[in-house]
Structures are given as C-alpha cells and as structure tokens.
Length: 255
Ligand code: OOG
Ligand code: MG
Image (cartoon, rainbow, N blue to C red; front, side):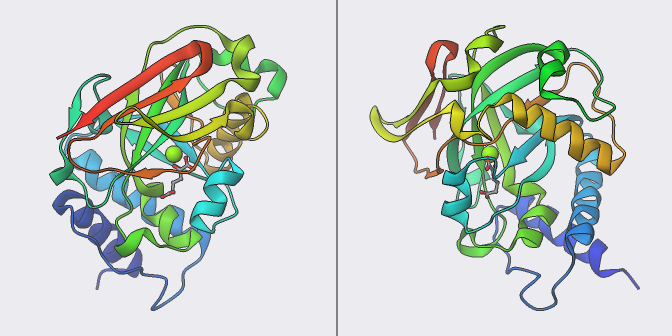
C-alpha cells in the first residue's frame, strides 16, 4: 500500500503538470510540518526522475506583506529546478499554470558551497552576484488557499522565476525601492528592507534551513530571498516588470 506522503506528493506533482487545482490535503487529515517537508522532497523526486535538475532554493514568507496576504506566519523554503527558469524579457504561457501570481524578489547566486549555518557578517563572502527577480507562484490548491503544512508540501507554490541583470551591489541591498508594474501601472511598492529587515538575512536563513535538512547547496546555486510585497494575479496579455532600485529590472509577458 502506498503511504499517504507518497500519494500526496504524486497528486501535487500531477496537479502542477496538468495545471489543475486540487483540494487541500490537511483539511481532511492534518499532517505535521516535518511530514510536509518529506512530501515536498518526494514531489521533487518526481521532477528529478523526469530529468529536472535542482538549481537552488527559495524562501517564502520573509516579509510581513506576504504573511498577511496568505495568513501564514512562518518562514518556509522549497526547491527551484531548471525547468522553472523563464527568460528575462521573454513570455510565459498562462495555460501552463493554474492561477499564477507574480511577486518582486531578489535572487542571489552563490560562489561557495553552503554547508553550514552562516552569520550575517560572512553572507556576502558566499555570494557571486545578486539580481532583481520575479517569482511566479502557482499554488496547486484551489483558490490559492492553504495551511502552512499544505503549502510546504506543495514546494511552497514554486512555479517559475525570471532573473534580471546580475551585479555585485551587495552593499546597496539594505534599503532599495521595490516596484512591481503590470502593463505599466504600479501595482505593488515596497523596500528590500521588508525582507527580514535585510535581504542578506534570507541567505543566513537559507543556510540554517539547509543545515537543519542536512542538505548542502553547491556553489553556483540560486537563492530567491522571498517577496518584498504581496503577489499579483496574472492575466493573458500582461506585461510584468519588477524594479529593485539600482539593481535594475526583470520582466516578462504573459501569453
Ligand atoms: C507561498 C510562497 C511564498 C514568498 O516569496 O513569500 C513566497 C505562496 O505565497 O503561495 O514565495
Ligand atoms: Mg516568493
């Protein structure tokens, strides 16, 4: 008999591939956060078996704006794979998603293996570059509603990411203006300070969750720091652009 974890992981993987929402699993039988991460690992295994490669991790709920929007109040993390990467300035197909949303983020590129918990002071030592980015999240649950355990099992709604120009402006990161525009209209504004007080703290948190999970993040990996503002729903025809102060912009079209 297949275990419940295996069943949920397969159902979430099918939901993502078929772009079809499912009911929340914790609503019928609650499961623990530990179990949620085990389900997440099983769902990533499905992707790996299809040839997808892990390229980094994302953090979620690192800002108040996101916690309030989704009524969840703990930091979470999930895996990014190569299949999730969308070209900066390119287009995404709405049909590949269930009910996608976009959120402005910062993406780090690591230059050393992260194999232990880091301090804030050494964080930039581990970085090759930083870029403005947009995360495309697409909860596999109906109405984009979930508990903490449900969203973790669902690899934290990870669906796509668009990364803008890389630079080494680490000193500027503390308080950069963040603007999300859809079709030229400003829909969200914030500051990088909204991300745990300083986005480098996301890298520190990443090192801590990885260490707790017994995982090593190889040099050359991506770390998405978590959205600075609430996310915005996408519709066909949208042009989406996120600007993060001096770092520049990342953008895409929805076809
Ligand atoms: C969960 C993912 C949260 C972030 O940046 O805070 C997240 C969700 O909101 O569906 O990616
Ligand atoms: Mg995000």
